[in-house]
Amino acid sequence: MPDPLAANPKAADPVALICEVRHTDDLRFDPMHHYTHGHGRAVLRAHRNRSAANSCAHLLPLLQPGLSLLDIGCGEGWITRDLARLVAPGQVVGVDLSAKVIHLAQAGGDIPDNLTFLVADVYDLPFDAATFDVTHLHQVLHHVDDPVGAIRAARRVTKPGGLVSDREGDYGAVTWYPPSRGWEVWQKVYLAVGYNLGNDPRVALRLGEVAAAAGLVDIVQQSSLWTYPGFATAADYAESWAERMTDPDFFPLIRAAGVATKGELAMAAAELRRWGQRPDAFFAFPHGELLARVPD
Image (cartoon, rainbow, N blue to C red; front, side, top):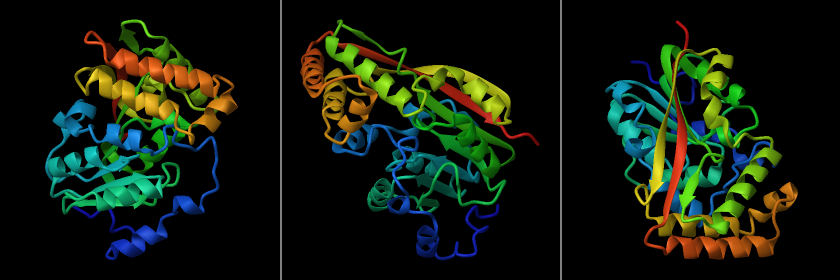
């Protein structure tokens, strides 16, 4: 099977290839092209709970050894590592817009021999057309202002007949018990920030529409659920969002959306922490899932 990096004449030298890809430090900050959560400690800690089994189970039955795979928006690459093991010896590339998080991925250890991490923009992927058998995204489309464009870019680098897979949380459909003013403020803030950035925090509902508009076929749209406790403890989940809501780097986005004051955020964070300590605390996070193929 051809090496997906072979289309680039510098592929034999991974360092040269990484240096050739656009680096986020060279990109002007664009609020319409911004990872809403940032990459603070609370975010990275939460992402380390993710695996192929708990984050893309809908894709796993279709994977087999020898397939080449691109993971767009890979973050530190915990899901990507699992995917690389499942398709080995097929070549796997994980890309993310953040140079910081790609550095963490490269330094994180336990990297299979068939896996490479690169800095790249979903809208400007540095690969020839029809390079990969499978292109995977997880929690990417609700952070971009053009989901159809992102899937169209994924389609371009996927081989005819190949698979495009995505999974997105629906921030408008989450539910929790017992009632909590903290979660009410959190949901209002997150939806407002996302919409103000030009994103769609509820794109999970329309993944089929997005895929069709991007020219994919054989579209399957389904759903799954993360629960807390389950995916993580309710206390850990509440603490994670309490930290994120009060992160100074996040506040400019909240202020721009005009949705909450620092005092309201501090109150909400305290409420989340109290909620998380309750023995009956429960949070359910629905997700939309997509499987589709590139036309032959």
